[in-house]
Structure formats: C-alpha cells, structure tokens
Amino acid sequence: RRNIGLARTTGLPYVISPLYPFSRIWIATEKIWTPIVSLLPESITNPWLPLLDSNSPWRLRHLPFASLKSDTYLVVAPFKITLFTCDPDVIAQVTTRRVEFPKPTELYELLQIYGSNIVTVEGSAWRRHRRIVAPPFSEKNNALVWSESLFQAREMVRTWVDGGRSESVAIPSLSKDVMRFSLHVISRAGFGVRCLWPGGEAGGDEGGFDSSAVPEGHAMSYQDSLETLLKRIIVVLVVPMWLQRYLPFKTTSEPRIAYEEWGKYMRTIYAEKTASIQSSTSDDAGGLDLMGSMIRASTTTPPSDDKSGSPPAGLTPDEIIGNSFIMFLAGHETTANTLHYALIHLALRPDVQSALHAAIAALPPNPTYDTYPVFAASWPGAVIAETLRIYPPVIGIPKSAPQAATLTIDGRDVLIPAGATLSLNAVAAHRNPAAWPHGPARSEGEGGEVHPASPETDLEEWKPERWFIEGREGELFSPPKGAYIAFSEGQRSCIGRRFALVELVAALVALLRDYEVELETGVAEGAGEEEKAAAWEKARLEAERALREDVGPVFTLQFRGGTGVALRVVKRG
Image (cartoon, rainbow, N blue to C red; front, top):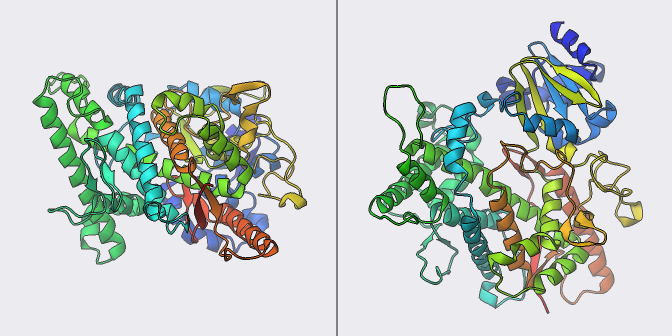
C-alpha cells in the first residue's frame, strides 16, 4: 500500500505487480513460473505478467508505452518501485546525473568471475578503473582495429569462397563465422594476439596462431574456451564453482573447463606483457593493445599497499584480467551480432547493398584508417547505425535512485522515491516516433507489417536511408539526446563505442567491395524468373520471421533459436 501511495503521488501511470521485475530469484526461475501463472485468467495477470518477462522490452517494444499513453510509467511491487522510460529527455536526465542515478552494482556482482571491473563498480572505484581502462581506447588503437578488421574480414571471405576458387557459395555457418571474426579482432587489438583462420597466414611481420588449435597444457582451444564460456555464461555465473566440479553433467563441466582455460590463456598473456614492459623502456613495450596499455598504466601508478586506507592508484592483476573479460563479453558478441543482422538486412535490401557498394568503391581498395570518417558519414555508417537502432545490444539499461530525486517528465517535476529502480528501455526509445524521422508503415503490397508494435510508422523497418539529411552530404542524422542509447549515454556510456564502430564499418568495407550477399533460396542456377521470384519471396518471409521470433536477449540481443538465416556470398561482376 505504501508503494502504491508513493506511485500515486508521482502522477505517472502505474501497473501493480506481485513481483519485482529485476528480482534475481524471478529472473532465474521465470521460465518455470511464467507458463504456470499464465494459466490464470487474464483479468488477474494483465497487464503485470507480460511486463515481468525479461524479454518484454524486445517482445513488446513500444506497446506498453502506447497502451499506457505515456513514455514513462511505473511498475509497483510490494517491496520495490520500478520506473520504465523511453522518453529521450528523461533518459538524458538520468544518464547525465550519475551520482543521483548510479548503476545498481548489485545486479552486476556476478560479472566479477575473474576480478572487479569497470562495469561492476561505482564511485571512487569506478573512477580508478576508468582512469586506467579508458585511455587505451585511443586513435592509435582504433587504427589497429581498422587494419585488423580489414585483414580478418578478408580472411573470413577467403574461407567462404575457397581462396577465390568459388564465385558463388552458400555461407555454411554465418553465425559462428562472425563470432570468430569478432574474436580475432578483439584478440589482436585487445591483447596483441593475431588469430588465424584455417589455411591462413599471419601476413607481414605479424606472429600468429591458430585460434582453433589446442596448445600443449590446455584442454580447450583459445576460440572454443571463449565461445563456450560466453555461450554458457549463465552456468558459470549462477552455479557455484565448487558445485560445478562435482556435478556429473556436461552442461556444467564444459563451462567450468572453459572458464578455467580462458583464465589460463589470459594469465599467460598478462605474464608475457608484464615481462616485456619490465624489460623495456619503450612507451610501446607490451604492445599497442588494450591489455598492454592497462599493464603499463598500472605499472607506472602501482596499487597502494600501505595501511592508510587510501584507494589503489592502478589496477591489480585480477582487475586487469577482470576488465579483459568484460571487454570480450561486451565487445565480442555486440559486434558479431550487429554484423550478422546487417548482412541479413543487406541481403533483404539489394537496393541498399548497391548504394553501399558504390560508396565503398568510391575510395581506394586498401583504405587506411584516415578514410574511416568518410565511410562513417555515408552508407557504411548509416547501415551500422540503423542496425544498432533496430537491434540495440542491451535492451534495457538499469539505474537506481538511492535517495529521492526529481526528474522533469512531460514538463513537470516528478519526485522519484528513494530506493526505486529505473530501466531505460533502449528498444522502445529507438522506436519512439517523437524522436525519429519516420514515414508510414509498409503496405501489404510492399510486404506487410514487420511487427505489431508500430502499426502506423516504419520505425520497425530497417531503413538506413532515414539517417541521411536532405541537402547535407557527408553528415548523418543526429538523434536527440537520450533517443539513441545503443552504447548507453553519459559518463557511464560504453568506452568501446569507437572501437566497435570502426570494426563494423571496416568489416563492411572489406566484405562488400568485391562480393555481395544474397538470401539462399536453394533454386538451381538455370531456373526461370518466376521460380526464382517465388523462392526469393519465400526466403524473405522466413528471414523476417527469424529476425522477429528467433532473436532475443541473453546478455546481448542475439539469435537464440532456430537455424538463423541462410545467406550466399557472390563475387561481383
């Protein structure tokens, strides 16, 4: 009753729920309880039960806000009030007032499996981590990201087309390949390790190793240890390690081994870089990569071991490895999945793919990092920006209000109760018609409705052209502050934003200069035009269904079921 009274005083629409949406117990068991509770009459469970689904921001999108006729509403549970918003102005206020609305670190404690890191801490500890972790994300490192992304994307295509011997071939494992591409890029730019594709060579003076091989002293390859760790991360985070050692199931033993193996790889790299730095006076000792930079910065400002209680200046070895894990967790899947979605949509929109190729072909075939701003402000940048608008890596960004605080909502001051949780809904914010250029929804003749959440606008449709400003070449649309939070916003925004964008743009440039992607229709080359058109339409419907129904959140938004979307790569000309 007290929380209902507090909700009423805000003047915001509210929904009464018997459960707190972010309860750890509920999140861990919702798949068990939801089917049972769903058997109750809708008069009892509506509207609160749909909002308790951890997938609801993606599944429902802008619908709850539209039905409540507000871009901000409350869910009132017995012990907690949660504010949900897709209002750009409210999001901007929350993200710029970090002290009043800090990250609820208790929701992130589980991510400290290797050590505390920039995601799991707040206050002075966060400032210490950021002081060491942020500087390595520099233009010098971005140049390395660019060149390595070009190299790895070309190597990926080489494996698809059998070294150029095939001019049209179905991509056998797109999902796994883009994950491997992203792993290779972050391994090189993050840790100074060049990973090779099957049959590949390092190139130049680079050293390299086969990421799929199992070195002596290891039970898993570098690639498999990370992929298994990320795929089964819930087991590692939730099931105590001592229990994992005794459970006789592959579902628990495999992620445990992956956790131990990847830790061994990281500690080996850490030891090698530390030795290199200690034996050299060069500013670049240990490499230009992120881990080398963190070690150098922590070596020059070592952790304090005095008894004065003053915080350490640098990062401990465990903290450096903890931050390395977070870079993989946040960066590896984010860029891989974004590239995956972009390639599918390009296959669905041959007209956009043609415009993208023209923009790529207008610059030299071996572009340097200096060309990135040109690509970023044209079709490659628009394709990536629109893909991240439709598929934000994290669908909801949690914040907290330890003390009562005032937000201006719809022109009036609203007091947010102390102890409230806030959820910034990225999916709905990216589809808010008040903030984004839009037109009418796709007609039946054009393919019909993409998603029921936006029946009147085209904001559910993938349209990179919406990012171009009429009469202003070399510049993309800049959304209102708080409307585009693919990388969050404010001081706690993603420090790897530029890293990810450089990697993604470079990947498109390398992949689509000489090749194009098509939907795999299974039609023989000599088939008639009518048969080809029917097969393409069938493939289109299946691709849109998969993107609508098989994508969902784990830690990031990704394909969770089904076989994905089958694509073909074809040599241009």
